[in-house]
Length: 152
Image (cartoon, rainbow, N blue to C red; front, side):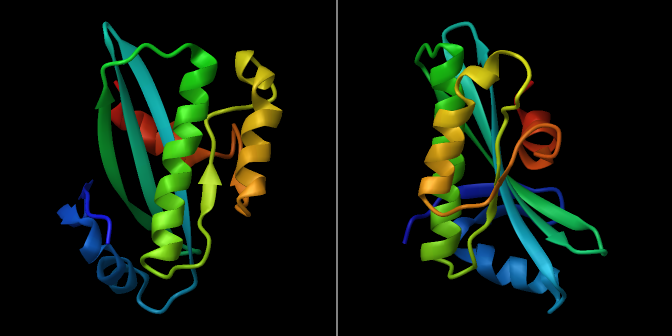
């Protein structure tokens, strides 16, 4: 089992192996979706990546967990966007393969406007190729709103 620490405004610091139980407690047998998204911010000689796992109880609100990772590496913008997708996909695969949840929806910090449109097909093809549904800006709030909170 992969173990990493997450934080949650609802549950505090959580070990990844406790995540399944907490999600089930929060979902309370209601219909829900799991969303995963990553955002990043480059500062000086490092990049901060924040990945959010959102549990959305359909029609009844939600909660989230997040993880922060620092890398002492320079990324150009396109490589950083691909790394964001890669981190989200690793968490999505963890949720699916280790915790036995259905495939989460992956929220990408890209859109059809701006510079990210240059890597749009590469990143969406990567995500689709692994069998995940995805959302892009402006609908990708797990990445662009929640994960973004922890990158600044």
